[in-house]
Image (cartoon, rainbow, N blue to C red; front, side):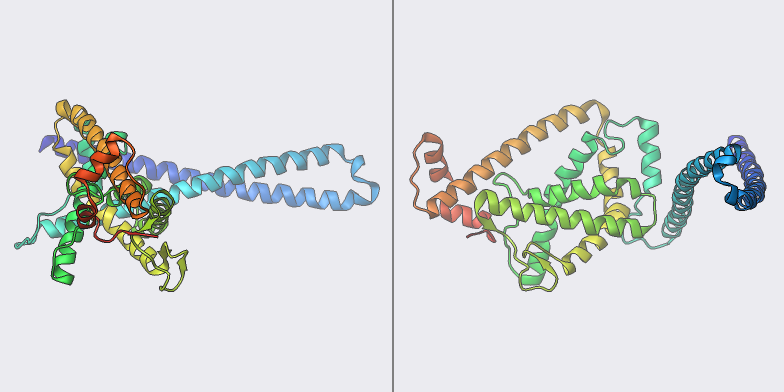
Length: 342
């Protein structure tokens, strides 16, 4: 209790110092503004009065005005930078308080259908004090986000398919395990692009999700068609589409997902990642990375060989014969139910 009291007292002292410094700076800037206006108007009058004689006859006034112009340009650049930073800090302060209040309301509810997710600020603090191997938006954090996204996306879409269509349909993208790289890359890109806005208001998450999600979806569609001559979706019939790869409606969904992702899903995933011990975290990451690379290579090879078979191209080496024997058309069609070759 004593420590808590001291902490509050210390916080109040800091707050008072900030208020004092800001008030003093604000008054100094106001005084500077008045002095600058008075000086400039005096120089304007002097310049206008002596213009008929020629500005070359007033070298000191000319040099002083040009020097002041450079100072004002420098000041405008610095004030613009400080203004942007101040707006960012103000938005982050309000957002952190708002999210802390929301967490408190949910925690105080007598009936909780789901566990109350931590705030991003709590996760940042926990990663900091534990010196976690996957703290921040480092390679380790992003890999685990990618890995969980590959798996979680398949599970969610499979359940959605069962609910809406009433039957099971494979939604995987790799031949080993319930993984799909599209979901993983989507999760990775959303996390990487929105991480710096995790403690900001939702409008930034929406814009970031709208742009980054659309870019990922377009890139995945383009790569699949260029590499394998196949497509898994086509929005050509939808309004405001771009080459059938993306459309406005789904880009808006990406924006909404951006908010949901960084404010709700990412904190849950980060909490899971925090439970991975530091001693085993990095070696386990390496093992899973090798597995996913091998899985991706084999998946690409089987799909490419499947495409070759549709073109009546015969196997001409031991590896292609192995693929034909272990991954025939019927099996591939079952794994990639929505894949169509052009």
